[in-house]
Amino acid sequence: MLWRLLRIYLRREIEDLQRNNIRLQSSGRVEALPAGAYEVLREAERATSHCTGMRLNLAINYSARNELVDAVNTIIDEARIEGRLSSLVVDEAMIERRLATAGLPDPDLLIRTSGEMRISNFLLWQIAYAELYVTNTYWPDFDRAELLKAVLEFQRRDRRFGGLTAPAPSREQDIDGTDSLVAAGLTAAGLTTASSK
Image 1: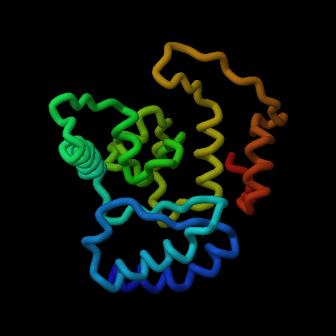
Image 2: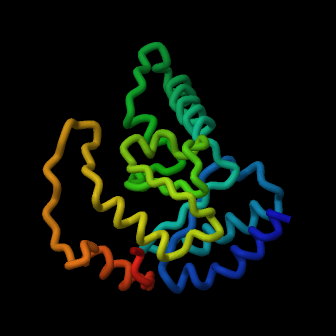
């Protein structure tokens, strides 16, 4: 049933993705999907491969541990083929280039719904410096107002990227304390909501 829904959804959304210049790509061991689902996924990726706007990355049959193991095995295989296995030294850049998300920026914010206080084997490498936002709201109920709350909370964070402190960026705030830049950006993106307070 799940794979049937994926096929239906992808076929239905291809035109919208193209019209909005959104490139679809997938992460995970998608070759293990049932044949019908795999073909429709690859068809959607091919149909949007020319799009240069936003990228939509579907994590399907995805495991961060598998992703890291696959990346390291690829590095070892390449070194073996090129005859440099005995002198191989693996660094972060080598691994990053072989991840399913190569070429994509690392996430700045990871939103965890349902009050779950765990990462669940998701983008372990990529979220090293991401800010975590946990909400008790369940995923089906996570709407635009909830997204706005998460973004506003994210903007209040002091992002240090492993350092000790960083000066807080100055920003204009409305009288009620809501960041006008975020509110305007979300409104422009069609994410208008009632006040989250």
